[in-house]
Every structure is written in C-alpha cells, then in structure tokens.
Amino acid sequence: MAGTGGWNAFPSFAMIDPVLEWRKSLFTPGSHFQIRNLLSDSRLSPLPDLNWASSRELWSPMLEKEALYNRDHNYLNRHPGLAPRMRAILLDWLIEVCEVYRLHRETFYLAQDFIDRFLSTERDLPKHRLQHIGITALFIAAKLEEIYPPKVTEFAYVTDGACTDEEILDMELVLLKALNWELSPMTVNSWLNVYLQLANLDAIDFEEFYLPQYSGHTFVQVAQLVDLCMLDISSLQFSYAAIATAALYHNSCRDICLRVSGFSWEEVAPCVQWMTPYAITRREAGYVPLKMYNQISPEAAHNIQNHTCDLAMLEKAQARQAEMSSLSRASPLSIPGMITPPQSNKKQHTTT
Picture 1 (cartoon, rainbow, N blue to C red):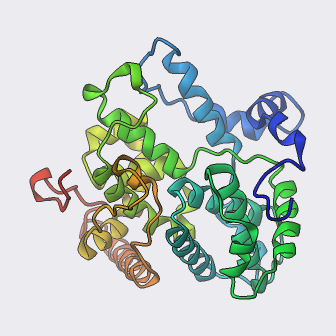
Picture 2: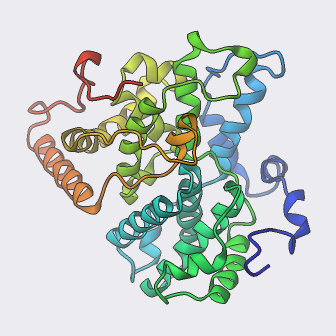
C-alpha cells in the first residue's frame, strides 16, 4: 500500500456501510443514547421532491450520519498533555498544506473530523504525536476525496522530518481501527453545500439538482467564517449542521438559514450567539476574494481549501468572546446576545 494512494490492500473497505451498521445497533443493548440522538433531531426536510428520489429519502441519511459520527467536545480532559491551542495550530497548518497541494475543502474537513473523533477515543496522547496524527488524517482524507491525491512521500515531506512514510502508513491503520472505518461524515462543508444549494432553489434546474448551482463567491465568504470557527475546539459543542447554519445566518438572514436547514430558531440560536464574536472579527478583517487557478475550472474554484484566517485572528475572536461573556454576566441587558446580519447592500462581497 505504500505510496500507491489506494485501498487495494483492504478489499473489505468498500463493503462497509456504517449507516447500515448503525441502524442495526439501534436495537442492541446500550444503544439508548443513539436512539435519543436520532429522535431529538426531528428537523423537517427542506429538500424538494425530485423525480429520482423523495425529499425524505435524501434527508434522513444526512441526519443519521449526524447522529452516528459523534465527537466529544471535552476530549482534551483525557489528554492532560494537550491544550486547545495545539489543536488550533495543527488545523491551521493542515489548511496551509491543503492550500499548497490544492486539496479540496472537503478533504480538510474530513481530516478535521477524523482527528477529533480519534482523539475522542484515546487517552493521554503526548503532544509530539499530534502532527503525526494530523498528517495521517489528511493522508486518509485525500485518498477518499481527491482524484489525484499526493503520495505518502509528499505528506511525510511536509512534516520536515517529523514523520516517515512508514510511520504515516502505520498510523493510518491505527486511525482506521479507532474510527471503526467510519469515514463518510456529513462535514460542516457538506452541510454548507446543501444549504447554499437550497438557498438558491428558485433558480435551480431540478433535473440537475445534484450539481452545485450557487455562487462560488458567496460560498467562500461563508466558508471563511466556518474556517475560523472550526479552529476553536469549543465549536465541537455544536453539530456540524448547526455550525453551517449559524455561519449562513451571519452572512445572510434568519429566514434563509432556518428555511434551508430545517432548524427552529430555538435550536440554532445558541450556536449563532457563540459565533457572533467570530463573525465580527472575520468581517473586520475583510473577506478574501475567491481565488482562481490555472488548471481548475472557475465553477470548481470555491471547492479548494485556502488559508484565509490565522491564529492571530482566532485569538482576537476569542478575546472578543471572553469580553462579551464578561459583559453579559455583569449586565445581561447591556449587550445583545447576537448581532444582526448587515443589510445586503452593506455586506462585503465580490460580484460574480
């Protein structure tokens, strides 16, 4: 398997259906937590009925995946040698690697999910292994998502000698076993794609609903806020669907984000409020225009992961969040719980 970028050594990989296995486990002893998770997410489908599938047939598997792929947002309690900033540094570096190799946003967000879920299953991980785990997660994600993924040698190279090819391949098996080979979550990026498609529903040709039919410029503006938020481990207290919904709220309006997500305002408001200082910080810094590439079509350019936020921006947002929380505790009526998105004619955006 070394250097091949393929899964030929594991013929059983294609036979695993994690959602099907999870459905079976719902009725096994000890499965009550999963049943409650599923029943608590009763969002009505915002998807249209299509001639090749019903709305519910498409929507239900998305909700099931959201319940299946669990992360513990308090997992650092089991890793005394790790700190929230270490995770932020790791993800920030992985975004840079993605930009250099022109990897897709979905590749990065798969890697992020693998990292957080893996660390949720482990204990007492030493900090010197964090980069090893991160680059291995990106290696796995690239093989799943990219048509031409970088070779394992290239992933080892970007670690500047910290990991060898063999060490990455060994860690690959460790991660896969810990994740139980469940490698197809609905990432924040996946939800954002769905939401923006639905936001543009009136202009969509239903015969080609499976093709993206929204502005790439709009997508990257919302995605840049998501990128900043996901650097903060406290984002994991919310579902990926809620994070994508809140990011859309801060770049559009309440009606749109509720219509495309199926959430009620009461369900998404805590995430919207948590995200407010990040949205303010991102807006103050200015959004980076959609980047074009020579060998990538303009219609697909928004899918490439770019490095548009940094740790300094994260620290500024976190400081603002701490200040807002302090003011809110001192005088609950002194500041609003969340900001109102700017009027459309006052937003920073790039015309298509």
